[in-house]
Length: 372
Image 1 (tube, one colour):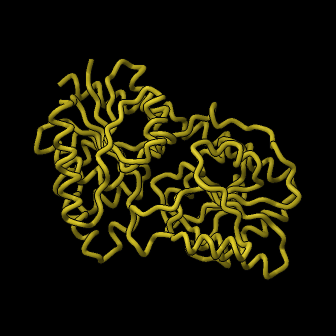
Image 2 (cartoon, rainbow, N blue to C red; image 1 turned 135 degrees about the vertical axis):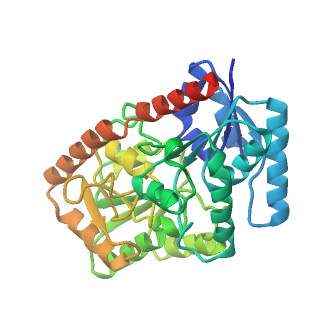
């Protein structure tokens, strides 16, 4: 039985967007271990689904934390002796690949998104750019989730053409995220934001747009599902104080974290994700699969999913006023038009973003590596 080691930034992804993927590897006969971090409840949930989970904490910008994280990865790899390692997101991709390169473990890396990697002048991202250029040259397969990210890595000579491929994001299980009936009758129009509570996910623009609509006398409900997140740069994080103030001003209703967002999606009239940039947005894929129109930014990782005026609406990046305007436009659309948008959205993601495409590409890459 071949051993596959998955290095994730947080158990949340294992329990949600990569749950089907990991279980598919197990069903294919692979022995799979996931290195990650998370709460005891989240880790227990992953284990209940058949996953072998080893908690190794996470890395920050603190050099001592980074060293401890690297040593933890190295210790597990030496003990588990995997045949192939899979890395996701920036920290596991950098530090995980660094260890697997030193130990000679074949590695498949998924560039799930780049954020401000190329635009930021901060020392953190300068170091990240330098390390990417070093580690990815020896990585066996590198998957990108959109052409913009791929082209940037090629332009900056981070990767070679021969070991890269494109994925339709993490894909969507359209049978799991199928349309379902509402469980409540909305007395007003409901907008729903789903995502980690980070500024570059557009949460502050969503709140500001809610305030603009409120000031204009437009009555709506703005719901938020997601976790406070402290694994990013401090200036990108939302605090509990921010959240409390927004709720006190009746700008949002905070539902909290959820590992199954289907009921929330079904009960919403429109999903809003004003993200500044994505690899490929899982929120938009899941909402579209459930026949919900979406409002998102005209940016990488979002505009590939939402077609303006066909499956939803596109707004400007980091522009609360334009977002509020698009939200008003969505409210004014006839119900039949929104239903038509939802149907077209589902048809699009079934055709272009089926999770089976992602799983098959990984299985092909694994087979190729293991045959060597």
